[in-house]
Amino acid sequence: MLVAVGQENAFPWIERDCGIDFDKWGLPTLDKNTFQSTVPNVFFGGDAAFGPKNIITAVAHGHEAAVSIDKLRRAEPVYVRPAPMTNLVSQKMGIHEWSYDNDTSNDLRYKVPWEKAETALASIRIEVELGFDAATAFKEAERCLNCDVQTVFVETACIECDACVDICPMDCINFIDNGEEADLRPRLKAPALNLAQDLYVSGGLKTGRVMVKDEDVCLHCGLCAERCPTGAWDMQKFLLKMTPAGQGVAA
Ligand code: SF4
Ligand code: SF4
Image (cartoon, rainbow, N blue to C red; front, side, top):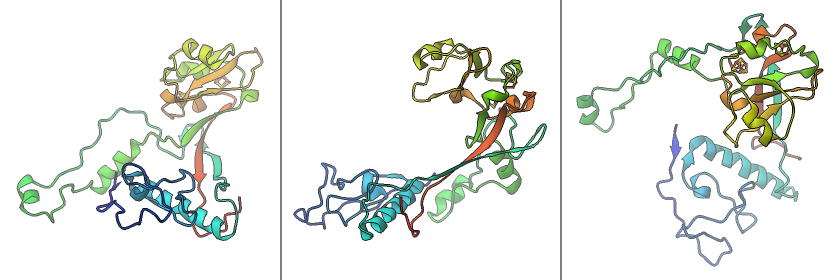
């Protein structure tokens, strides 16, 4: 992870009577969505906005601020944001084949090789982490949890045979009577304790039950989708595309 840390993240050179408000840490008071300061045509982003975060966040701030600036120039309300493009595409390539590596082996993480200490300490110009060779990098990439590949359930195709329940290595699929979320959570095979993670609850099935899945423990292995005789489960890749700077951004 690359951390974006401004070396001089302070603004003593901005006069305090120019209309831009600063908090007790000397950071500008901003709208979290538009990055607009208390002077409407002044925007901040990156670690200058909310302190050090990673470099991806800093770039995202730049895009969001640029969208705001574009809207301001068009005399449109900056707080009305363009919706992101979202998409789900099946990853199925055959009965047991997926376009992503779904091996659930619990390999240990590969260690990134380091330069010898005596060499690394001899000069500040020597890079300490040498990086993986191509073969190890490929294997390491295969350990990806594929968080972007979602289990998608179609209740009208389900015949409630329970084959997916049997094969799921994490016990995260349940066919149970419906209820409020607080009532569902403790009734799952693996109780869903992370309240920050919503449950996946299907519409009603023929028996009157619902499918309830705790996304928090799913490995994205695709075994449920391979086992299902009716194709009620599918593994679909989720894509979220934010509006980049430089385009017309009519919301
Ligand atoms: S993808 Fe794997 S872990 Fe997730 S519900 Fe299906 S079988 Fe279970
Ligand atoms: S394997 Fe398919 S048909 Fe059988 S219960 Fe699971 S989703 Fe329904």
